[in-house]
Length: 556
Image (cartoon, rainbow, N blue to C red):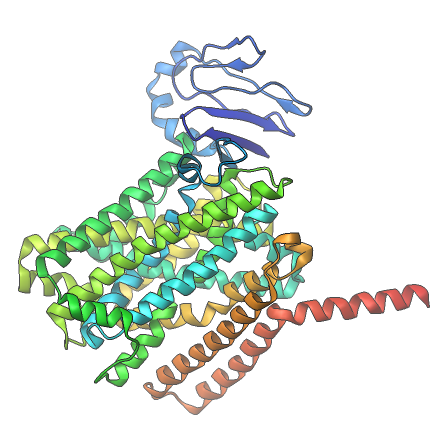
């Protein structure tokens, strides 16, 4: 396993290949090597630390003939992916002991939160926002606010789990659960990733069609989006901070485009404030109630908790020092709060624009929104909208790919080269999307609505493990969640399960299903509840019973 450190104040890579002699070939140019006064080998592209036990650092030369050949130039991107470094880390600067807060340190920790917040801005969320505004006006902005706050609490728990233990949520699931429940949970989270990916890829393809004046069909946009998610591999290869900066640029693009529309249309400020601050829904229809329940599933993505617990591992902190870990948790919480505040105001802008301009148009969807804006405000405004949706779709598909890697690697302990993991996770997620774009294009609105319901149904399988693990002293040590916090999250989890059953009831009630299907759904609901009980605390009870039986067998 290789580990890499990136100095947060420079672009130099400190490379050490640990446990094995790994061949990292130079892509272009001849690296000149030498030795500094402290004995550290160095080259023009990297600084290699002093040799330690089981550490081998090498540099490789290539001939001028090979370097200038056209085959070498064409194959350079493929070699870059194949030999991409693993476990790239950002070095955190040291500060004086008496310094309680440092903006320089906060900057070093800034990055994971902005990758995390993109799941709150994916095309599924944007569609939920515009439907919320068109159906309920400003009335449900308070639901969006509190759903985002709940998301912050859960993301903070996820970040703490990774920061304290040095392992992501999927890895803890592999260690804590037995084989059958572990595989079941992995399949459910993969299903959540596929569901969100369908919305993200279709959203990105919809933006391409809008920006190309219908020249690029949806299925071609799906293929383009599926291929360009490999972009993040190249960005991460050169510098992890470049990757984080790229995602920051996409978030900024969404903020600029959607808030440009907000200031151009200028929704009523007093109505926006009332919608955010005063709970309730005056003169709302049953559709508005369903929309309120669906907001939770649209805002908080199950796979995002798994992603965030892995992203925080990119910072190099001394986990043996509890003061350092506590400080890291503080900075991660501040960074996550800032990123989610930005995401909330972006979502608010979309809701307010559609509440002001399209209230009462209950058939508003992401695929129709561009034409609606074009008809009402002109081509330029629809282009602005399309750019924002394209940034949303591109960024979310890349983070979805990232999440798929961490989930598969964590649950199954797969140690493939990164390009193989990306190819597999992309293929798993892309095939259903492509089939939908080719054969069920007219049903995209219905599918998207059901996918939001699916995300809400699968959400407990991310929330409950992270709550359970952060409540175990054997995992978190002194950073274990206090009892009041456990109780609060326990009641929230019960409420969330209740929301899920309400969503299922409303969705089934609106659909005339045969009796056999209803019986099947009832059976699935029973297993759903039993599995929730197992991953919440049942696995602990079963483990204790098995341990007691083993002790009795030994003593007997």
